[in-house]
Image 1 (tube, rainbow, N blue to C red):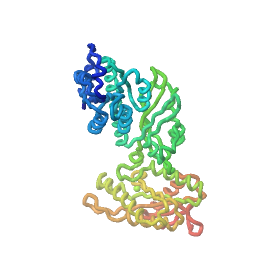
Image 2 (image 1 turned 30 degrees about the vertical axis):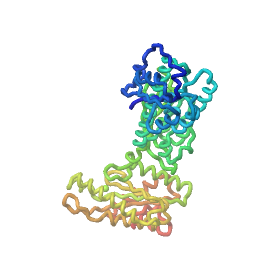
Image 3 (image 1 turned 90 degrees about the vertical axis):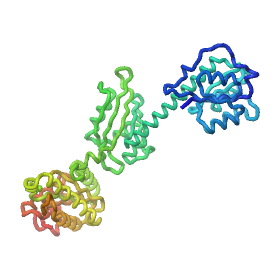
Image 4 (image 1 turned 180 degrees about the horizontal axis):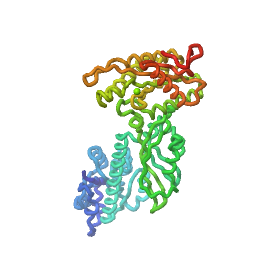
Length: 470
Ligand SMILES: [Mg+2]
């Protein structure tokens, strides 16, 4: 790339000769680090000025009219224009206005060339977007120094813009949100991606830290406050922590929050900035089966309980499955075979839920999970009948127990299932899960390969014993 300067004027060199005294060459000063040369357009046919630019290492073009200059600018990228204020046909002011229609002031420098008497017009030229001016007769050293300053500024601005674009693209590619916290004013910049990660538009958030704090899970809030406390006295340069933040839809998302501390001098923390990455998927997925893990299941269960507590009509059911005799698979066929069986069972559970209609599996999306080992759970939300859940449970019992080919062996897995409905006698989400677990153990003790509903969640009309077999 070369830096170009365009000089535009009308035969002014003859009337206002360029100062001819010897000056310092500015070539070394303006040569960019990448070895490229500045391109300059001179709207002038002052050949001395033109030669001076060429001699100083610029790639200079000379335009003999404003129209010729605009033509140059429409065809190539230039760095600077030297523009005479007074020219026939189209004067410098009109030419400047047209240049600014297409070239912002920070992307193309325009230096006006004018006589002392035109100073009032120079003021108008600044208002119209001129970057600088030089007066006639032209002082070579002053002119070259100003050209050097503006071409360097133009390069620095372009480098900064490139850097910002590169960073923005990298951040977008990483799918991260960005934040920038001014500790002195308390204001926080949140990038659009930051708010989008939590289901919000940028306009939904103010630039305060409280927008962030109020969405952090209570269990992680103190740690977050500790790390972002400007008076903590920490000498760390970076911090990193995992926090849960509540999404607009009410669910919690796991976020990896990274930040860097910026201090004034050695002590005072003045700024923090960093990124926010949604790690929910990796955090809450069981690596073997891909199902939600215990962490996510318990979160969803807690949310279901809270909804039920607010509105008892929002009933939910917890189904607890445990494979029968799974240990013998591992012992006799190896752990790889055991893993294969767990994966197959996970897919079968998902298929059962997909095929169940909304009446039986609940109006909301069901959440299947691998709780641990050979234990699986299903959360059915917005269920309105015991019968509906019973249909799903029967299907799970039947589908999971289909033969599986493992390492050349046909294995018929069976499963014991316990389940419980939310009801007024339950005291917590854990209580419901515990009831389903109890029912599952009862099913085991009664011979395995069966399902039982926990008694407390039976409707009075169908409650014969403490447990009932589906
Ligand atoms: Mg088991």
